[in-house]
Amino acid sequence: MTQTPADQAELFRKMAAGYDAAIRVYQPSYDDMLHLSTDLAAACAPGRTRCLDYGCGTGGALAQLCALFDEVVAVDPGRAMLDVARARASQEQGDGAARVRFVEGTTSSAEVAALDDASFDAAHCSMVLMFVEGDEAKLATLRALHRLLRPGAALVQTEVLRDADEDATFELWRAIMRRRGATEEQIATGERQIHALMHRRDAGEIRALLAAAGFAHVTQAYQSLHTAIFVARK
Image (cartoon, rainbow, N blue to C red; front, top):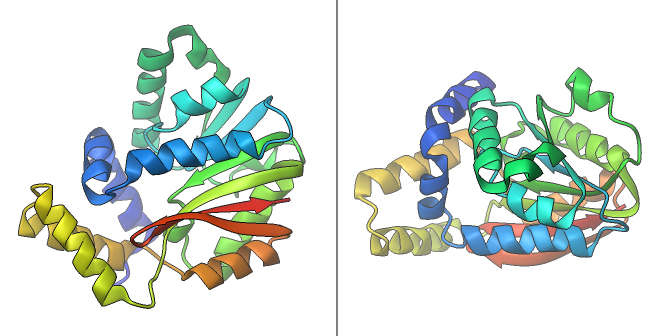
C-alpha cells in the first residue's frame, strides 16, 4: 500500500541519524554515483558561482559541491535531515560551511519560491523526485527547478527507476545485499519501502517529464541496477 507524505516524513525523521550508513547498504554504487553527479553538476555549469542542492538530505554531496561552487543553497523538507547536514558541514568544512545556506522546505515553500529566476549555475537533485506523488506534482517540481537555472545550466537528477524487468533487477539487488551482510529482514524491509514510499517512473517517463518542464536536452549519463543519473540542460 502506498503511504502518505506524513509517513515519508516520519520515516526520514527516524532514519536521519543512521541514513548515511543505511544508504550505502541499500544503494550499492552510492559513493560512485555521488562523485559522478556532483562532477556532472560542475562540468555542465556555465559558471561556478551558485549551486542548488535540492533534497540535500544529510548533506552527503555538500563537501563536493562546496569544493566546486562559491555558494550552495541546500534545500530539504526534513528538519532532522537538515540538522545532520548542518553538523556535518561544520565538521567537514569548518569555516567553509558558511558558504552553505540551508532552507527547510520544498519548491512550493515561500523561501524557495522567493529565489530569483535564473540565479543558479547548476541544480543537483539526488533521489528526490521519486518521493513526489503524481506526475503533475513531479512536473511542478521540475518546472520550479528549471526556473531557477541560468540559460545553459543543467539539472543533474538521480532517480530510482521502475524497471521493465523488475523481477530480474530486484533479484540482483537482493544478491548484492546478501553478499554485503544484510539480513533477510533488512532486505525485505528495504524492498517494502521501495514499493510503498517511492512513486517511481521508467527512464522514458522521466525524460518526458523533464522535456515537459522545459529542459531542452536530456541525457541518461549512468545507471546502476535500478538507479540512474540524468543530465537535463536548460
